[in-house]
Length: 244
Image 1 (cartoon, rainbow, N blue to C red):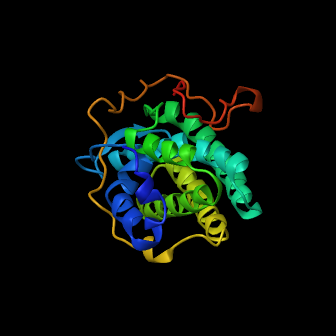
Image 2: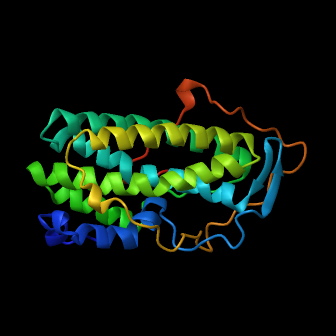
């Protein structure tokens, strides 16, 4: 879903963008259309601790966020008109590359299937930024990304507090630091409209039926190390489909 130019432009100050993002931002940042039936239900017992539906969804959400926020950061490096926007782009690229590498490392160990393509809503955000230029790009990037990062922040805190899985906890720690860093650099652009980032979450997202967790590995099946050698780490995410 592509936001109109009227919404992405001057209406930003008037409140049009917040209405659109209030309906889309949380599901969009996750790339999911349906919610888990029972987030606390244990779906696998791993060597790193029990894995719940909520744990699985969180790993998927972090991966999904990078599929559009990473390319948004790349655009900031080339289209941003101020040093602050360039800095935000650098942090977005570096942060989501790191989170993506962690997701790719832990997903096979936990039997989690990762998304490989941004959702239609996420693609709409990228398309809006792709068509923007000059100050319009700076403003849209700062506000869209500030809203979506603010929306996922509570989900990170909840998982960090409730998870009993060591790998999911590690990812939550990393995500918490990364998202807070991104919020800070986006706010330093001086373009964030704070009246439009303070709204309640909409209906929680759920995993689509075709993104279910595969059966856990059978006893005796070797588990790969958490941190793969540097020369085997998969490249950072991009808008194009990749191997999960």
